[in-house]
Length: 515
Image 1 (cartoon, rainbow, N blue to C red):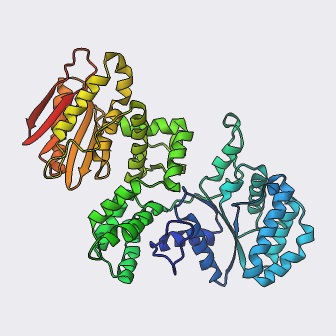
Image 2 (cartoon, rainbow, N blue to C red):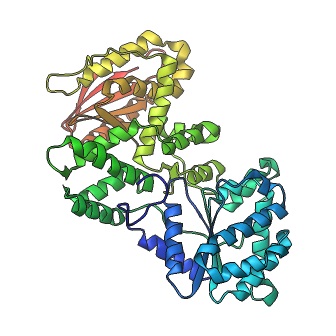
Image 3 (tube, rainbow, N blue to C red):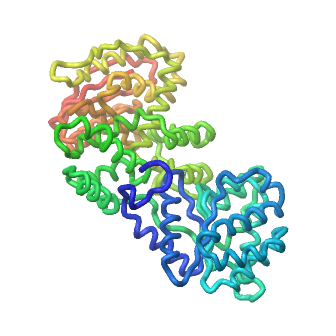
């Protein structure tokens, strides 16, 4: 399932038990906290699971609210917002706890504003024989409205004085959304006037990973395999799913869904192989879905984020990870980056989607046109990559000159990738691997059917660096179990002469072109 909440009795699900237990442990410690993760990250599914666990105990009464789709009239004032909160609590308890519902109904006439709502909470906590836990989903829906911050401020005041009889309050509060409350306050105010005195500074950090590792992915595959009588190497497929997705819940589920519904029906035997996953990856790259649309929209709406991603993917630049740096933090909130020693695109699927988007922009601007028949295809269905690079060199020579030097220094890698895209379109895909070196290399690993090609893109920085780079490429080819590699060198010197030649080193053959 990739749409909405997952139900264990209806859907094949990854093992989220450790994540649920982490949340329950925080609740047990009376914590107030925010589960803020990107869209389609399993937040709502986790919240429902927590609610069900709490309902099964003799200690807690959960009260689950949802701020999505609330009528605008409830945001006009603190009083309106307080009345809406009261009504949502009443609606929830009506079918979950009749005793508490009857008490709530008796208090209706007393709730008219945020202050009286605060008094109502204290009375409700006094009346309840069990500890009350407030769970609120989709808090982002209220994030641009001041009454929501007033509500948080009221909870904060009560929390700090929670041992006083006149301020008894919820035992624990869990907010769920994409943004943390600090960034919600940032959204309300103009950035230049923003302050970070969040009314939610009482919250503890939510530090468990919501991504799924291979051991958490495996139970879903095992359940599916047994129920549907589909044979597979569960461990191998789980690890490959994690390799491509970094455990992003939507991507893991969607790739499995594609294999089950689109790839498997085309096979004569009911098996899942790594090759089937690679077919699913090719399919998902061509999809238009809300997850990918959100990814691209966030890049289009934030120029600083776009520029950072462009420099990473196309210019091979390395950026140290600093969660306090605004652009990096923004990329983390939207699920574009993952936390490593350096800034990394969250997963290989996202990297490919963003790359396709960047390349498509250049294809449109440069009006790159190729034959419908692939002129580079050899009889064994491999690509004549020497001819591919020769044609690219000719394309550059025909369309660009010294006057375009400044443009090309920034865009030449992207132009090459745009040139390659229609050649491999439909039958292959490519992944880029940034290499940390003085040369700012970008290695592109291209697969086409069962064949693999490694192309290194680098700027000419002198003969010494060139020779060092050739040796590095030879070493990389060895790691990839390849004997042949390819090298594209952007040479900004006026006297560059459009060279092309084969280089032999370390028992490897490398075809190089200068553009």
